[in-house]
Amino acid sequence: MRFRYPLQKLVDLKTNQKEQAEWMLSEAIADLQREELALSELRAEQGRLAAELEQASIRKTTISQMQMLQLYLQHLDRQIHSKCEDVGRAQANVSEKQQYLTEKLKEEKVWTKAKEKAQSQFTAFVLKKEQDELDELALNRRFQTI
Image (tube, rainbow, N blue to C red; front, side, top):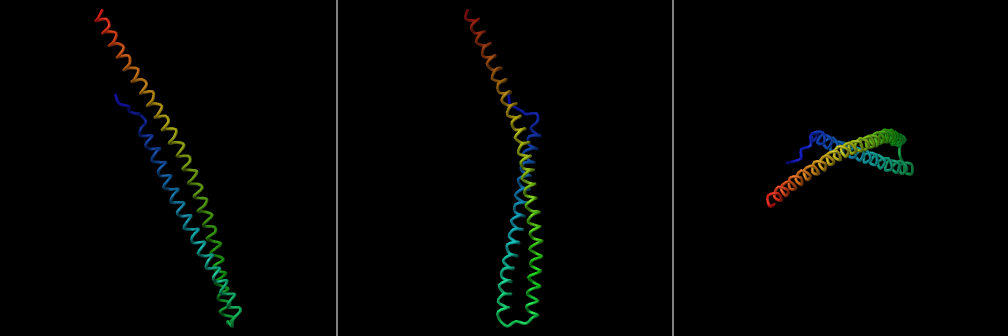
């Protein structure tokens, strides 16, 4: 006799949902890393530009070039501010996906435990049935020898 769990499709569904949640979390983490990388590149560009603006103030530079550098620096500041907001949203998304994965892990664990319990009950039932049959055979053999 073989064990067949009547709710196996549900266990499979919960396992698939957990795997999808893992994929979604890894995608959210990759998005966060991309946003953080873009932010660090913007900050590096801002630092380079600030150094260039400082050097321009030391040497002879026209006012229009100084204004152009200053405007570009302001533009970078706005981009950095915007990218910080993007990073914040990406972090919130990662947090949300982690929470979703935690829920799916719990659900899968509940159904897996239920299946394991049903399987152990089935195994105990089969072993008892086999033992009863062996006892009956032994009893019949005993009566035949008497």
